[in-house]
Amino acid sequence: MNTIWFFGDCFTWGFGAQSNEVNDSLGLPHDPYFKLKKHNDKLWTEIVAEKLNMKEVKPWFGVGAFPWIIDIFLNRIEKMKSGDIVIFGDTVPDGVLAYNRLKDKVASLNCNDFHHNDCYFRSEEEKEKTLPFIEYHKIPHQQKWTEFYKNQVEKISKEILNRGIKTFYWSHDIWKKEDRFETITEATDGKIVDPHFSWNGHRQMAEYILQLIEEDNHIGKKSLL
Image (cartoon, rainbow, N blue to C red; front, side):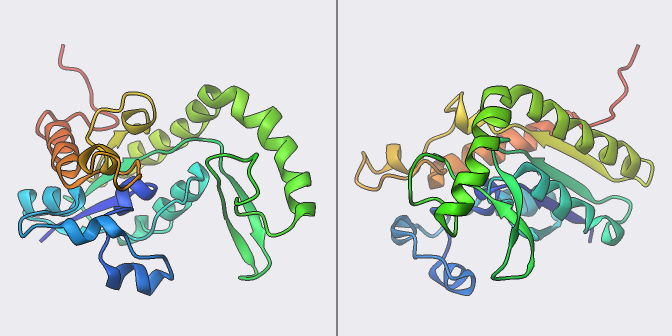
């Protein structure tokens, strides 16, 4: 059985609809929306893998830093084999890599609103040093940063295509700008405020990805002339 690899941020991981067991293992709070799960409700990654009869592997989530997702991708390439499929979802390019002294390693630093104090900065000193870079070099130039990172993904994907591994790419614009798929907030009429996919949103997302695969719109596809 071939493997389908999923790389991305919280929308790939399934934030908002993960089981208590999964969140406990990651030290994350429980998702209240999970209590509304019905028998046939599944995350979009599960739906896609089952439909294609492939083994689902979702190594980790990007926590909002685009280069972190690319790093996770790179670190799994040697395990991929011909016939495998990669689904790569990008993210808002504002996140940065930073040294995490608690874990003593380079890690992803992300926050949806860098002006609030409940971000992932570990001290005011770190915030004062990091915030100017993000505000002046990243946030005003999101499109350029996205193009920069996407070019890296494309180069990697074209290389592994030579090994018979296709990469299908989807953009964070789906949830950030287009609001294409139903959210938990919409599904619960605002009773649970969460911008991540509802169970219906996961089904819609799965259909979108399966269509990409059915149409063979992978990175590096050559046009038929």
